[in-house]
Length: 176
Image 1 (cartoon, rainbow, N blue to C red):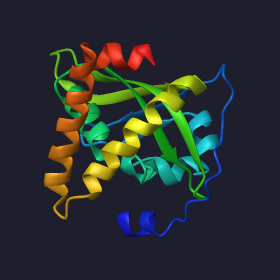
Image 2 (image 1 turned 90 degrees about the vertical axis):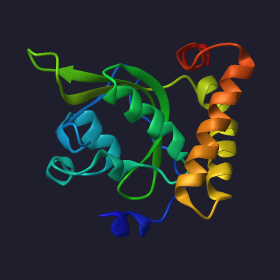
Image 3 (image 1 turned 60 degrees about the vertical axis):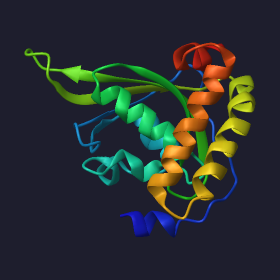
């Protein structure tokens, strides 16, 4: 799967979806998709059967810093919801931005049984604001020959950036 994804050429073309639509997906606790809505199918360029049962990371754009996904999945695994700006990759190499709200799904015993993500079209100003930060974090990650060291360095840079603003991550995201 990862080898196939690395062969997808990036087009640099940004896609958009209607402002009144939401991209919805659900995953199991390991991040494999169990549900996708028609908006997700339409914007990603994949057929539903190409998405279901596959890791959500198959739409991960290589220009996204890994520390953002670490934060997202770590927050979800702790049983908390999270908001994040994410650039995803389409099947043909185009990309699209979303403002994601991801949350855990629980069974009757309050155990996490999966995750739900609702994504809407982000405000252009938010993307303009977050793009330089993501580029800086990605550069930090790529400066390390060891992926784990790069991830740790970018997590520290993200934490420091937000701490320097005197706010927490949620306030940062919602303030963009």
